[in-house]
Image (cartoon, rainbow, N blue to C red; front, top):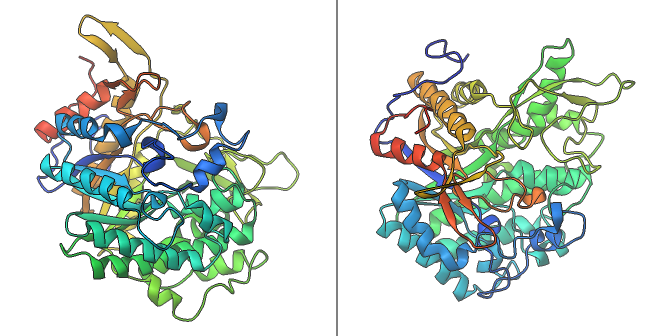
Length: 483
């Protein structure tokens, strides 16, 4: 259970983090790079999806985004100015292998090589994510993640990338949030490639898991600097006090959490998951030996956390509540469990409509410690979108994002409380370094601690960035008072 010490609203200040606790920030390739048709990069499913009318708010695309491909050096200078200890970025698969397989694109390798070298020169630890959702379009045309071959193509890509950068990258993360890739991409249709097939979503779950296991083995073989290996999961913290909530919580936990943690860390799929989804698929895509391939030792488990969900079983008569935090475009990210409904939660909320619940982060970290006591953890994403406003001052343009400062302070407090209770938590990467392309919401949602003016590409350090800068300099949480 969450700690009872400290402020009940998690607004503690002056909390000291140990020297080995790595604090940084995170981004993803399609969200920031731009240069979609430069440097030999091939098309990804997100290029196709964002250019399809009606799929993304305002018709926004990642064609330019933050133009990081051209501005990477000044962006690294900004990271150094903030004092980041680590930078979690993702590598665009279609920049390395434009068709998803075969020959490596030397221009793509050169870009990421310069990026990694630039980070090391500035004393910033490179944390490289191999897959943050930008599947090469030719692989989707051949079946995408529901097709078994995609797992093998991913392993090949991981090997080629590790051969090129595996003497310098500190931490390799295979996949970011495979829940989103599988269920939002192939089940609900809210994310690229926009398919709405529950059986395909579950096949994608397995092949993403398999791809992870194969990729871990390839990176361990190819890397020469003994890196850490990781995967990042977006855990669902599930609540509900209705009489039917225990059954609803069990079902959603199986689909959202245990469908990944159990094969990855225990070498098995939960029996109840297979039973719940038997009417959707027979899981015939799981072959002998697959689970042994998936169950590879990882050095750190990445934890992404933003909010909680509250569930109960639907009575089948009243309008079904669907407040699961994701865009509803007609399909379902919950194959086999459409009878679960997601209740509206108490506020306050971020601009995404997600509830703010720092106690959920503490609860999650303690739960993972209990389930997997030997597994080190790292918070690889946590942050919030708010309606930022630019203020003209004598010192220049400023963004006084007090809500985001408060959000970060409360969640760092939750992380500190978990540390104090013995959780092996290795670090915290704030999402996101910069405002960027927020997937189906386009540029309408701003998560960055650095504001990006999309017309001029000007970067402005928000108050939240200055808060993080002070935390990094002092190793103590500064609190939330505005200055």
